[in-house]
Length: 421
Image 1 (cartoon, rainbow, N blue to C red):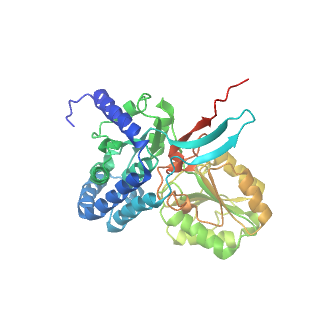
Image 2: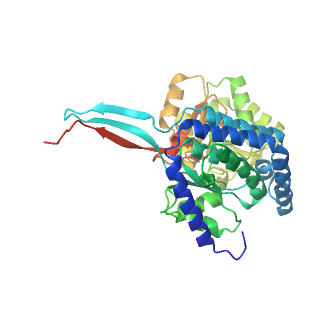
Image 3: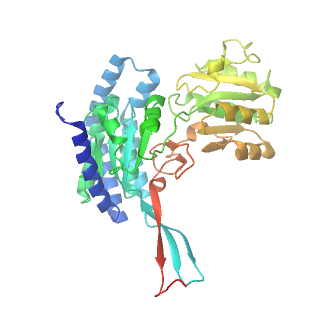
């Protein structure tokens, strides 16, 4: 795009094209949508060398800018990750079509029959930062749900996203669908983001995926409805009845598998009965794995810990750091999560069914886990093929946002000359 081009005019054109494409996509049969997804997957794999080459440009620029190791890890594509992108596109294609499902059906004494049927949302705007795979995930899920989408990737992933987007367009062409169904904003100018937030006539919902600054901006300034989470402040509570082997596996995987994802554990809560035993063992294991443990007074005597401050409770590190504190009982653990959590993902490790039931009932998070790594907080791991993000609100979508969550519904009412008395 020429630097002199008017951003509002550019975005207005993109919005108009998306709205026209959404009209066609809403009535596209499942087979053609799936054909486009499989064609895109084949193109991603066939062009893997070009995608990795484009990603190398982004990686070099990211290192020059001094981005953190976690951010660079999010950005990096190798052959394994490109294969995962292609596999994700095929997995979405293999799912049942979420459009046209009869969600409920009933008849009234008046003689009318009513069906609630799933329908596309329309146009989805996705604003994201350094993860180039979001280009494929978001495009695929919107397509599967019969929507058009406008993708605005971050400047960090500019070249990678363009290379992946070209593959999505190829899939659409091969299936005879409008290329405008998946559009990538062709500028790094941040004015495009501001424009998207107010395009109420063109965009039906915005999904931001990125850091706190981006999501906070979108939530504050958007006039379009938003599916989002601001923070992933993920807690693991290790109950007095926890199995030591399970606890060790789950805690270490939750924190160390990938520290920069929103499902990474950020705070470890340990029942007081475990201090001196399993609790200490968990802290030492985290330290040995290269994690900085910011511990409360009860755990600070463990060699290698750093004394926690009040700011550590409720902090999303997205790094090799975890806060750890001792709690007196289950109720206090739930209270800590209520005060400092972000309603994203929280986990209990316990062998006490009553404790598990209480935790699952009272922890008000989109995802509540039991004896499982918090790194499973991912749409792909939920069987959705991919996700467009995690939503922590309570209206419409909550938790991983997959294709089914990118639909709405309408009521189909049928009579036989039926009139109201």
